[in-house]
Image (cartoon, rainbow, N blue to C red):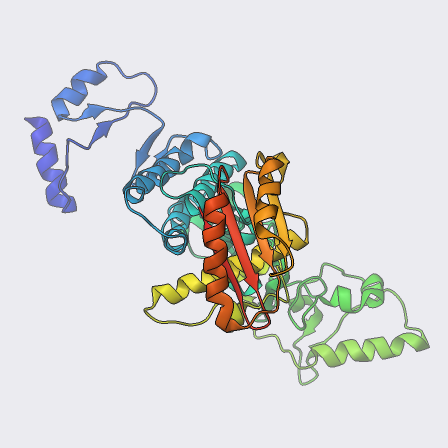
Length: 449
């Protein structure tokens, strides 16, 4: 009866309704008669580690068990997709929109262990190249290239490691700006704040962090970036070496007395004649800045126009450069509502990647468990039939044919159909045959599975 009264009072005060079928009583330490207490309340007995509102409860933050739920959701989602045929373009869309977004919340709180990252990436790779059955098929392009942005030569899939770092770096930004937040006060009291200033360390985007000058009490005059694209200690290293207060705050170098208010940096000795010019350049650089006593110093993110931090901008900055000459504008065109044209763009991308990979000798070899024959053929001069037989004789399981004749667009379709029919007859035990036809005005890839 008492438990029923407590339940009614709790629901009346909180406005929430208790679902006892989903509720658990978790003992901390040794609790006597825990089963009797749970029976009286009408709930189950649980244990640690557990899950609360989708978050792990009681598990170590670096434990692999924290991520078991994410991997299980990956596989459950694939179980829904593998019953239906999905083309490579559709698989890529699902990877970018759904699979890469599943672990986002956990990655914003915890460091992603390497073992978990490799397992999640393997699921995505197998799904992209093998389909919903996760069958093992050759991955025609390395995963780190697939994860590049389209303008850099990739397909725009997320790199989980870079995304994890970008999400965690956002806490540095929030710590510097949300000064009245309860969580910040708890961390400051527990671990302390070094130097009392705005410290923004441990982040790959530190070079993109600058300071908007307010009262100058939390910005270093020499060591922080507040008046230029680099700190004054880097712009004027010789003057910095002569400074009497290398760790001085901006407010300590500013003299607000009377009409002669201005900057008064102190140096250990008098200047030589050749150093006067450096001092004049320093004063000219900082002359336009003034300390505002009523305004707080602020951290700004120079990678965005409004000065606010964004995970997208940091992720793009941390991402490798990719191919500077990649013809992304020619390959990825803007189409609305035409999925077939998107698939043609995907084929163009794969064609270019296969050609580049073959050229740089990065294609799959026997070390990857597959023997692949690459036949560079100029149409009309090499016996395609004989080349296929020779490749099969050497034990190759996959074959890639590069036809580099300068053919006009009118014969492209006939050529691809002719080679496709010939290859189908001679395919034998080949797992995959990729035919790339390149000409003066076109480039097309045909994948026969």
